[in-house]
Image (cartoon, rainbow, N blue to C red; front, side, top):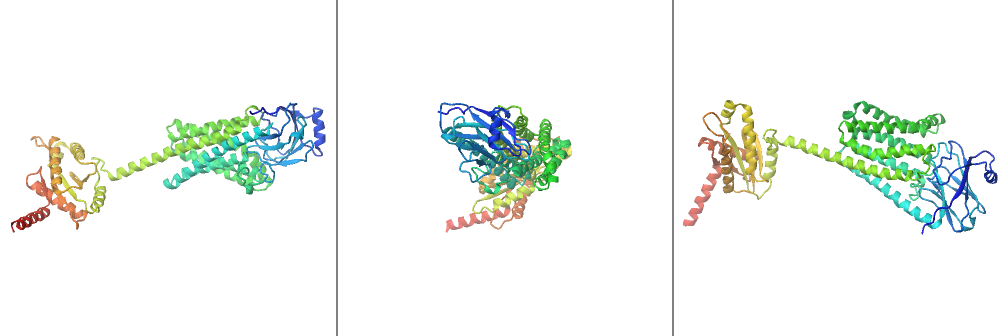
Length: 550
């Protein structure tokens, strides 16, 4: 059963030249150090200063092996002085120590160390202010359980973030939309920040090539994440459309981050100092600006902005709480660092859903454009170009019979002249709808031009084609569309041509067209078949009768 962490007294002071471990412990016994609660998040390290921390466990009846932990792990080396043991130096990016905590610094404290013996820690100076930290002393078995649990939690969070980034990169390549790439860059930078601050990239990843870079790499990743986020928000939320006043400002924010990165990593003191001073104000201003841009875009109708706010707002709230904690407030919220890691994973998923929604919208727009390019706007059937391409594809299917019907509305000019072009347009739309209703789903129907339509019947022999064409004639007549004041109704004449091996699209359409003109010449509102086909069929029947007689 897990046991509670040991209660401790704690105090700290800034390190001064000439300090010794014995002198610091003596000052602690005299009460000259600044006392604090080791279980609460406490800001200890000031910029550019080293510090001493003294921990004294309170008496306990249990004498067992324990683990001393500091979380979150500081970015500077820490040396432990315990009674009867040599000094043990430990750092976040130390790869030589026999023990490494995950998400914390940890020392193994043998049972014979002394249950109430004071423990002295020296923190090396850090150029920037360190995050608040807390100290724990717990049984070794409990530490191993907690350490394994944190490792599973952190691994899951990083796996989610990197999986969402990989998903976005795939979409960026498939859709050729850089928005997905900016998102992937932002998520990777945020994962890098968390990986460095928690020490995950050092242990368990064991990326030794990053040793010594934590104090530069973490702020660099933070600034780059701001730049990626700014460009991503500008494109994803479509600020140019929904928040034009903030669009240029957001892009300016993205352009301002890289120079600070170069200044911070220049190794020139005159550039490093102002870059360090501008680092946190720029991150704060940038976060507020992105939030405002998202709110404005969402209010004005951007669907993507709502996804952004859903994922970004919790992370921003945690950032505000973390800043307050760094200034001494909210000492009891030791879970903020783990919450920031989880919020990063949740944000990655939410924004990935938003990107998926964007991809679907792009697919829909593409389908609409393709449909507009292939469909006649008035009749909603295939236009001439799309129909010719579809007919060519159908003719390439060898071994399957194919019939082409050429339909021409009778006396359509009289309808236009007597009732106007609007009535003619309505008649064309009604006829097209009726024809679509009569044809099979696999049949093709298109507008050839004016009042002419083509129907392509696949897998149909001549008798079936004649039957379908006759049915189409009757259907159009039943619409009872008046042509003029003499109670004449709109009808259709249809010519049929069957596909032959030597046909092209042009020759097949021409033969069906000739058959349609025969139907008109013979009285309209009827079906006629291509003469060449009929002549061929007549010769076949004559040859068959001759064979039977012989």
